[in-house]
Image 1 (cartoon, rainbow, N blue to C red):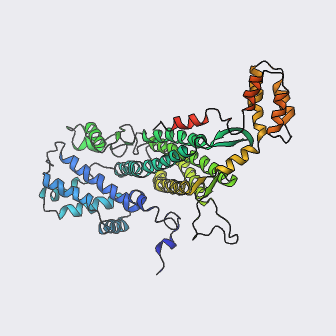
Image 2: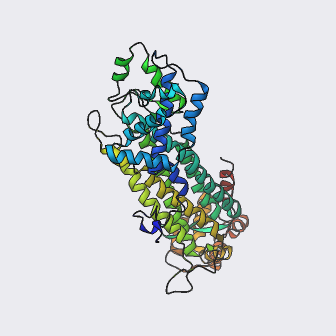
Length: 460
């Protein structure tokens, strides 16, 4: 029988299914339902602890059984919930009915006798928004940040190895003042650190305040209970910030911030992918060859930078979605429309393409090695770049029109070391100044680049 992955509509669940295995725990329909079960069970426990006359605090044994329902969610449970949904056509209500049926079979009367307190005073969005908060937190803590740390670690290794390797830089695609390869990689590391920290600091909000955000049903059912406090306590127990100023839905501003942070990280990775692609094309990095792999169906010699190309492509897809989420999710008509429901189900798609890109970046970074001979060769063929330090030094010594003289000497002309030696020796300056200028080469005119690369490694 044909592999189900080959029938998948999305490449994430088809071609890249193996790489997406970890994310499925969070963003699949299976994962979504599992989070809903978790929220419903925790709310049931919370309700028992707030002083309702009809529902006294449950015993530790009963609580242990309820927690086991969360810990032991299985395929059979999910299938049963989907079967209920197929009849009633409501995803959250099907979870409620599943839990009520399960409660009725419990040996603990405090569970079986209080099954109606599952989904008590809840609107579906109370359950769903917390489920989204849980999945986004788990994805951030267990997938995104650890993977970004792996990339940072690999970048650090490359910086250590290449921090002093002088390289011809390019501005506007033309030869420019030298830098070092390690310094250029350090630029990406510094940017990535800052955006990673931004993602780390995103506060994740949730709401649990009923059909339009006013706890109407709660107050009418038990007016002696401080439901604002109960809601706040419940949200904070789950590890989130409570938003008690909402309509039916939590306004998703934090999701927009989260998406914007991932978007910014992805933009940096797109920039890095393109530059690394370019450095490979220029011969500054070589790629380790796997003898069993084929680079081209017709050109046997090819070893293509496919990992960086894969990363760039997936980052573009991810950012298209992330931008849409940031713009769309905070907008909802009046107290709520349902347009966010179908959109928010695609959060995992954007995170999936981001994660896939990060894995490709790691793979690509592990394949490359610095080609020092090529770096030196290009520098030795670009003596025109020492015109900048020479004219700058001459200006500092009061020499008239050094820029214009160097422009006439170099612009549009083939120049070499000998060209500059002749120019320097004919200058009306001291021998010490001449000696200083004669020591300048394309390979040693790198400013503070090695130090800057080293300093970046001191930052976490």
